[in-house]
Structures are given as C-alpha cells and as structure tokens.
Image 1 (cartoon, rainbow, N blue to C red):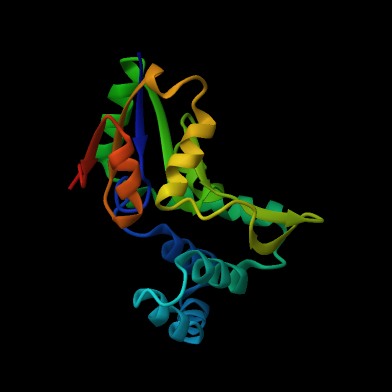
Image 2: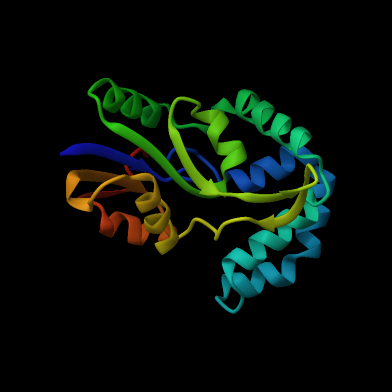
Length: 194
C-alpha cells in the first residue's frame, strides 16, 4: 500500500486563514477594510448558512482581483509566500518533511486558491480552488468548485491513480470543511499541530 498524507492548508498548516491575509497583503488595510464592509451583509448571511460559502468567497475574490493580470497575481502570490512564512506552523512542516523522508506521498488539499498555496510548498502536490483566466487576466470566477467539504475528496480522487484500496490515507484538518476528508481517510486527525 502506498502511504499518502493529506493536509488541509488554512488553520492546519497555517496559523490563520490565508484568504484574508492574502487580500490584506495584496491590497492594503484600507482597501481590505472597505471591501469587507461592503460585503458584510453577504458575509453575515453566509455565517447564518443562508448564503453559499463558495458564492460569497467568489464574490469577494472577484471584487478584489477581477481584471488583474495573471502574471502580476502570480508574482504577488510568490511574494506572499516568501514574506509570510511566519503563517506556517513549523511543527506541521517538520511532520511533512519526516513523512517525505519515509517515502510517503504528500498532498495539500485546500479551499484556498492554489496560486498562493503552492509557493509555500513547492516540492509538494497542491490541490486547491482554481481561478479562471481569460486573455491573461483574472475573470474573478473560479474555474473549479470551491475545494471544500466533499469536493476535497473529489479532487483527491483525481490526483490518486489506481483504486482506493491501493492507498493508506492519513488526513489532517481543523474545520467543518475537512469533515468529509477526515472521514474518507483511513486515519483522520483533527487539529493535529496546535
């Protein structure tokens, strides 16, 4: 059996939600505050489970990044990963590195946009929410479903070749969005690196 370690990103490998951190980093505090004030009614509805999480996330992402050149966005993502290493839980990184040394396959499965997750872990397979680009500019829409909940399992299945029984999966998560993934794994570990 092939050993696979699957890690959620936000809250599991990081200390905070990186969507908020990335927007603040890319746009500054004033624009960040104004944007979230503007979208606060939708965010309240989302918290009350009256508005879909993915739709609120996409609208906020679109507000801040629609029309930006893809090359500039990717450069900002790489800079974010370089300058915000302090967001990463070092205990988690040490665990990942040890698993890699033992020959395990490491996969990060995240609802975050994979453009800024991948630069944190360039040697690891990252499966995240993908964004749409047309004519070299961000449309503000997601190309894939938000990689949250059951979608994490769907995306993981796309990455793993061969039947499920060929793998022993250990998954790590910290939130409601990881529930299905932790249940799907042979071993699911909740809030492992606190």
